Length: 128
Length: 128
DNA sequence: TTAACTGTTACGCAGCGTAAAAGTGA
DNA sequence: TTCACTTTTACGCTGCGTAACAGTTA
Image (cartoon, rainbow over the protein chains, first blue to last red):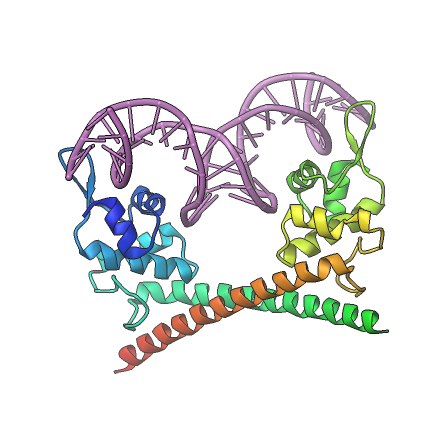
């Protein structure tokens, strides 16, 4: 499978796929012509990458923690539908991530409250 | 007031102050030696910039919408403690921002839920 | 030949951190 | 002189978008 087809089948841009490769999240073979050649498993791999990026993990974190082949337990691929245990080394990491996420939520909720207030203020003024 | 003092008094880095100037959010005078010279009002101006950045506005949005001197109404400086009406032109903008923020919150809440589940799974496995 | 795909290289964005090389002021 | 402060210039980071220029393939 060439890069274009993988892009179509995952909905991820060609640019992103090359970027993931640069970050070593994907390691396609190369044909005689130099074209990247992906095997079908790359599809779920890409979906997993997207999923973890959506969780707020950076590419290097995905590489270090999630792909962690050295831990030798099947955490990857993961599309969010199957939940499985995290290896002990990752527990602290996920706890930190959780704290980060909750801090971000708190910050955004403050912003939301403030903007709502201003919009309300504006409505009052407009109706007077 | 030189840039270093403004940095100390606002808690904002010198680099950030220069960046705000590059983005035209600050326009200090220049001394004979070429040093930037800020008047005291710059302090609250910087605080306001930080506040709006915290709301998720970009520097250009802050310049366009918040500083909007062309609207000729006192929206700046604003530190979040004083609520005042938004001019009509800005209402749509803030509504969009609000929608953005709520989408981000929803996304982060999904991430939070997922991570919590995985941590829970791990606890179960560990206790079995 | 042409059109569609692929390759590499590289600049742009946002909000800075950080370092380099050089002038200024007490 | 030295030390702290200032200046400008510029590269790095993150996850790509978007060319540009060139080879490949149907």
